[in-house]
Length: 583
Image (tube, rainbow, N blue to C red; front, side, top):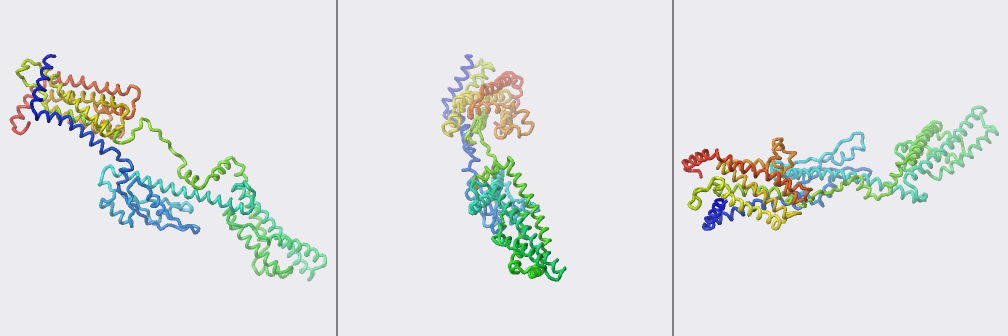
């Protein structure tokens, strides 16, 4: 133990007396911290709105829009209006689609979204027999940056969701507003308060059915009158007094019915489209019949002649009317079934919403409530364990590259044994490594301001990590010289790629998934993550325990494996020296 102490003291006496050596030691302490801090700051919040809003994505529309029932509909313009208030991405609204696409090729924009000229037309194709999915043309420059396309792809998805949400919301709002319109119309007609849309529709259907019954009665009476008059004339050449009385009686019924019918009808656009055509045709025919009868002024011969001239067949019209009444009765029955079903109560609640609320609900019926487990506010804080551990490894790597690991015989300790020289010189590596760890953690916590629920444990994890890393690389260099240094670099590269510092280990190649648990980085980062996001049970101490296993491996390498390597290292050093160009 005394010789170990002597080696350490003599090392620091020589360092303290050499200004250059002191400056070098200070540089060795500071440099790893800069490596960690710059990386954490550069990755502080790359996916936040403040950052992504600087990524330029062009938007252009050739959409010509469509006109539906005198309503102008242009989804391309609607999307652009919505994106103008969206600051997630740096949207650039170009004058033409050519400018947008050319800008992507030139590298002015990371991506471009273009709405084709038939975009709105395809949006409403579900109303036709030929449904066509509308498409937005998406152009992305994958050469410009490796990560940017991943961000712009999210922008593409956001636009797609915006389109779907806007379209569904518009349709839903229109539906509810139409229902409100029917309700308002009903109130204007002095309908009973508290009626639902279905009640109103059923009432109209019932009124239609009553009117059709009136038409049927009229047609029956007219057919009876005209047939009676025609039969009497054909039989006797003139109408008998009894037959005349009968015709007059029937005609009086017709006159009475005509007065009722002339009060107007309730045929309007609120009726089911399946009945509209038939109802419209019957209405026109009956209007003509009523008009002709009115002009005939009770003269059956004149009426029959005018009806024939107009091409109206009363019997065919009665058959058509019977078929229409059957369809109307079927519709009324279906509406009554709907009204009596349990689902109708839900529909009433939906229609009770205002248009904006209902449109918003239909556009996004399910909302996901996110409950973050171990929440971390910024990406930089989440990445700080990786960059801090990497900086500590880099610090240890610089140490073995700058400071000699071998102890040359000195006057003050000529009888120092190899293991004493090993521990004596390592104390210097340990202290500088601990200074590196302390500085980098203080900077992370108080200069960068990372999130950390347990600052002391964060520093302690960094301290243990530095101890493990420095003794591991020190042992490799003691045992294998420059080959050991090179091996430390290789191990670092493997760990940067395969320790799960940036990407989840599950998405990495299988070779990394197999060696993941055996890498020192893995356990050092996991211990620090417990301090940043929050600790679970004894995981923090478990990870540090795994990490300390490498201390045993390091001692075996530095004290035992180094013995057979000494002669080989001497030969390598002599060969390097003879080259005249290698250190």
